[in-house]
Amino acid sequence: MIAARLTTTPDFPKPGILFRDLTALMADGPALRQVTDALLSRMPADIDAVVGVEARGFLFAAAAAHSRGIGVYPIRKAGKLPGPLLSETYSLEYGTATIQLQPDSLAPGSRVYVLDDLLATGGTLAAAVRLLERAGYVVVGLGVAIELEGLGGRDVLEGYPVHALIELPG
Image (cartoon, rainbow, N blue to C red):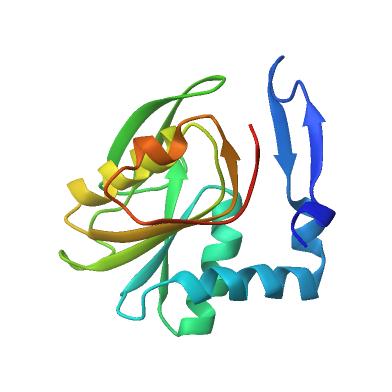
């Protein structure tokens, strides 16, 4: 189902990168519901919030949090949030990036589950885990719609349960 609604754009955003785009899936209500339900089925019941990683992770996280009746907590790109912030800079396949969160939005010790659209090298999700743990939260697992095989993402997240709905060649 995911593969049928997925498009791949070569050399985006940089040469040598195959960009996996879920826009068509997100625009299809029944498909989005099916993917969200599949992600929800892998989430532990005893979590306090769902974390969405900018930007496509927000979509899955908001839908999942709404279904569970719990909060959604965004991890944003640098410069998108006001107030006291924690930041984490990391490497990705095509450069570096910085993500941020507002550490006072959840109570220390909150149990969180992280959702994103895709796991490739693991850089973004590993940075999100570090950031959440620095803020005093407990990361109980991570879920993605797509995992790209052979890029080492799961290895970078060793010690954390990672749930991928489908695996594709990297």
